[in-house]
Image (tube, rainbow, N blue to C red):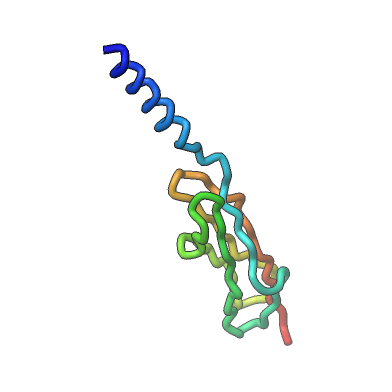
Length: 103
């Protein structure tokens, strides 16, 4: 009986000790220029971004992009990037400034 209890205890320690908690958040890295520029009436094609998480690895495919570029008039707009890892850790939102101007 003591051997079974000891074995159960050691198994619990091994199982719990091998589980590491995800304490990191993903990191988003912009590709291309920041700030970027485009012209009034010219389609803006964003260079994109990558995302990496210590536990999940490359999670670029999970990035959510909010492209707020309005190329109908001059001004400053933003493209916002966010991503969440599988444990619910949210990266700090990254933004690219896009300057729309007359050429």
